[in-house]
Image 1: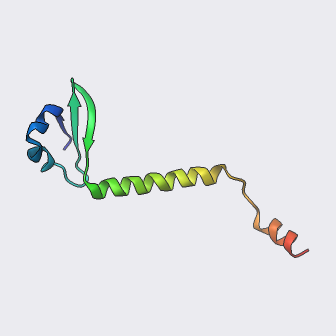
Image 2 (image 1 turned 90 degrees about the horizontal axis):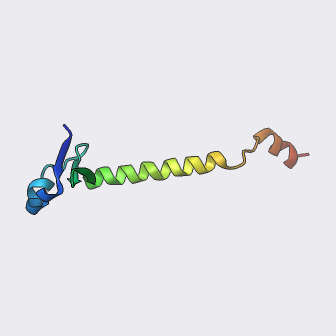
Image 3 (image 1 turned 90 degrees about the vertical axis):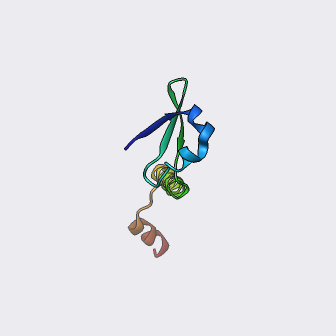
Amino acid sequence: MLKIQPVSELRNYNKVLNKVKKDNPVFLTKNGYGKFALIDIEEYDEFTTALELINKLKKAEKSKHYNFDEIKEKLFS
């Protein structure tokens, strides 16, 4: 279930933080617009690890690719 609350709810932050669970973030609004997301630290770690992997894959995708047979032929000819 999506939990959206106004940032003013942080006056009683323990109540808000107790609602944050893995795979169940709490979103806070400010002046009626989405502003913050509170997520479980384990979920944050998984997210940053996945993002790092995606960035490495994108970088590798842009790099020059080598054909193993061509390299072997150059080395052993």
